[in-house]
Length: 354
Image (cartoon, rainbow, N blue to C red; front, side, top):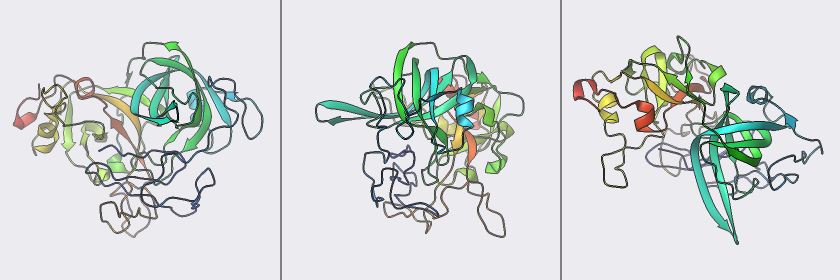
């Protein structure tokens, strides 16, 4: 249920797995030409990510000048970068941050060179409540850099807001057109213990705890599944637990493991899908970040899906008299079943998930 297309500044989506994912399209005020000046796509978009490489980027990712102004990047904390107006044009330098979670990594050969496209989250070890989403495109430098959890890096780039037509992560603030300098490795900071009354999305109407966006958090248990299929997730998958916290399962697979062992999340269906009471006695962990859902214009599905011209919204938040609903909310993204769902979780009336 992971979309196959995630690019800053591109209104491109691809049908993936069994999840409803609109194809390419444009919305109000959006040009039919992408950020590189090329014609907009229809159907499945090209692989180039839509963003031109930074002409001023150095091969090691450090000390490059802004291609438009010739000025050096501005050193900022993650929270200062996040506070910039999207598409401000300010090139920022984020020093000594650590990669704490990978979303997805893709590779391709371009002549004799391998190019890598990746999406990941970083945290500032000196300020562990500050995190940020990063998109490295194919030609961002170094082109062959493969991100790994625990790498300590300097990042330069432009703060961008994702297109509202990007499935699940539309409108998300992040760093694009990046240059990366690898400094070494460092132990990833511990998950942030959440404050009291954390995470109540009010069924998608609210955007709780923005101060922790982009970081890994720990929500102590016991947590009870209060809704196994919230309206806010639309055709996506997820559930709601105590306190109104929305939990996405888009990174959790129920496929059998490669070694023939038990399914990675074999008890998940029993916890959230049996109609009984699912309990996570040890709590939940994961990345805290934004979520939106992009429906098809005609409420259909499949490769012919045309995204709703209104872009992503949270289902169920539209006012009764019509109009747009909440564009996005904040949800928890567990990344690994054993670590983030906990070894002591209980399937309630369907039996134990131990």
